[in-house]
Image (tube, rainbow, N blue to C red; front, top):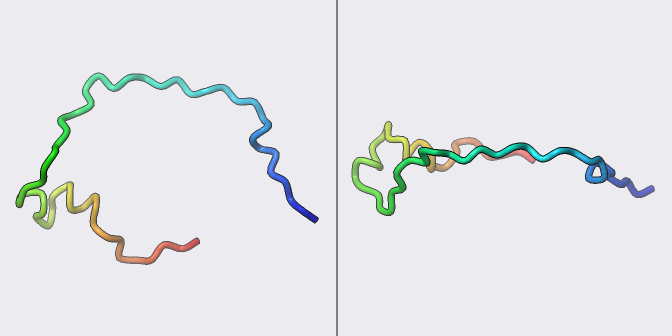
Amino acid sequence: MTKVNLDALIQREDFEVEENLNPGKKKETISIEDLKKDSFFLLKYQKTRFPKRN
């Protein structure tokens, strides 16, 4: 028997999205400082050490 997900048929209200008044400074290039061991850039984009499970 085929299973059907009817979750999409339930009507829900949209979440109110507030504009970010201070989106921060966008960086177009990276520097050597961004590749240091404790930098945010390296921590955010480094390859995961454990494989993802499905």
